[in-house]
Length: 166
Image (cartoon, rainbow, N blue to C red; front, side, top):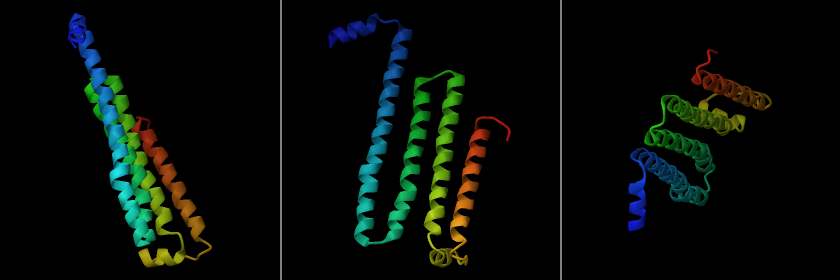
């Protein structure tokens, strides 16, 4: 341990600072990766088992809607925290913030995309949930149209997030 301390003290203060930040950033990224796995193991798995034991389709659908967006949001938060710890230059910080916002936008629109299938698998379920009555033959076209609108909206929002006027 003394040899490591002696070596550390021989480095210039700037190099020590940079190495410390890099190591800290790697640790933070590792912690957020573990947090993502912890979310899957400690939260989602028991809820999934509970949903299967209750034999309720709705519980499983809600878990499917929430799981992937939650992971993307954790990644976005990890990116922003890592950029703050590394104390990167302004251009890199702006890039990382835009990237994190894109992850959040994708997470929100992914949840909305999955909600379309959850709400309208059949016209009976759609009627029970919303009170709307749509012919069974038109329902696949309606789902596809709504999904295309969501994808187009996602593309426009992401392009605008990167500073382009759409």
